[in-house]
Image (cartoon, rainbow, N blue to C red):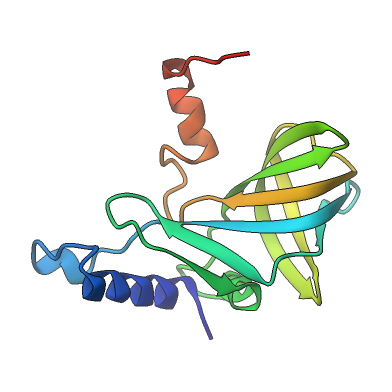
Length: 174
């Protein structure tokens, strides 16, 4: 069974073998890359009463990539990603990830930040129980991208909280 720890160990081993990570000290074996994940779907529905987000036409693969300096990127089967919510101290079950949902509603783009829990994959439908952290979740949408936050670092610069922290440093163009 794939879990977060085995995934990170395997990806870090690949990075060390390819030379993209530098073993500078004895701690190098213990260091792990921080990964972000991206899922895409052709449509979504949200049931507010049950907090269930269903992604229809979910991609067969989930993209992953590491933040600098590792620069590791690849794809894994979505069926291998869902077990990251299995039991264990380093699972998403004990520390659910944040995600940014980019949803098209007609010709309007909506961004919603959620916490993802309890995934259920049935064919090409993936259902999450979600807690909305920011934004307003539509009942329906299409062409959805789910950007899942870095493992184990909820306050990194790319997380929702990290973006809020550094928001004052950015200029917004309209």
